[in-house]
Length: 447
Ligand SMILES: [Zn+2]
Image 1 (cartoon, rainbow, N blue to C red):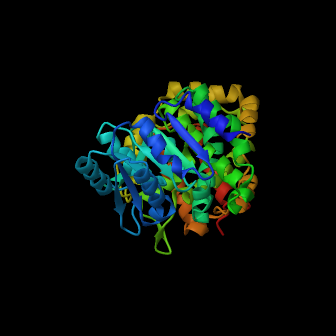
Image 2 (cartoon, rainbow, N blue to C red):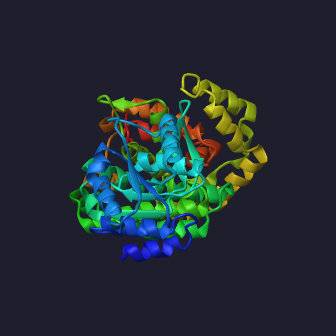
Image 3 (cartoon, rainbow, N blue to C red):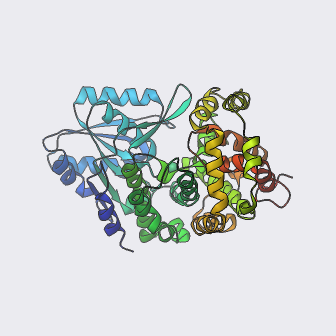
């Protein structure tokens, strides 16, 4: 597959990103792209110690050689996150310099630059240093504010420059994390199909096809990705960029994220650490992805063509009951009202639930076949992750199966977006599914 051709096609539906270059030995293109898209402007390179060494210093050199006015701002902290104080720091840098940000880095630096640039009503350029997340080309920025992880709608970068040699030299775990973040779009796509059937978030064809039509191919070489093979790294980065473009086109993170991402959000919000360290977005998402594949496996074993819709509707709780359940579940959570807020947005009345379940029942064999064609089995996904070097067991990121089990209930209520677990709640099969995934012989059997 010609990944550059895919990207050029995709840029036609991108709302923010106008230029994307991906290939080997490309850093010298930085000043040319900058001058073309930000004529007459000054640049400020935003990097940390590692990304400065990986690409920042070289980009700074090329900018100076080309006569582009350029400053640098280094984030010196060893470990930093997309927390609000850093956004304010970059806001000050942009105020002081009056420059356009050139984000040299991966997820966090990109998100910080995205927000600060947005606050200044301007765009920015991104020089990617790792194929680690799908956020490069998305318009959403994920930051932590007052303990809650929030997705702020901003603008994706105007220009993305990705040098495959730089990406391939990134720490292996970062590439493996990016692989998992891309593979997450497999179950996320299946959950979008459920929201589409329910009519809550219809599939948007352009945003669907730009990524889902090539996704299987782009994640087909996990061993090559792990080995740093340039073609495999280029495919991975192209896939991550296409995910972001799908989100730009949909004006939503729906094309790239569903319940598998919420496991990561729970871990972020509870400040989960393993061996003293925060675990990467992609590794957390890997555990969520495997979990959702396991849920789909068990879901496919059920026969919903015989569903007793009347009984399900009669058993469907009121909004007040759901709100009380959310308050009880989130009582000790750092953001105790989150479940309440989201279930209030997500709640459907009995008439709507009847329509939704009737659609599932009447379409069952076909709908199940479509979902099966989209989603991978737990075993298949686990084999891909093993080859890519991504986690194949929650213990690898310091999450016990018991802990993972308790997170499932939170993820069902963490976001207003309809997911497989919501379908299971409506159909009265939620407890059975959870019992099968975590019970004897299940994918995450708790012993
Ligand atoms: Zn992600």
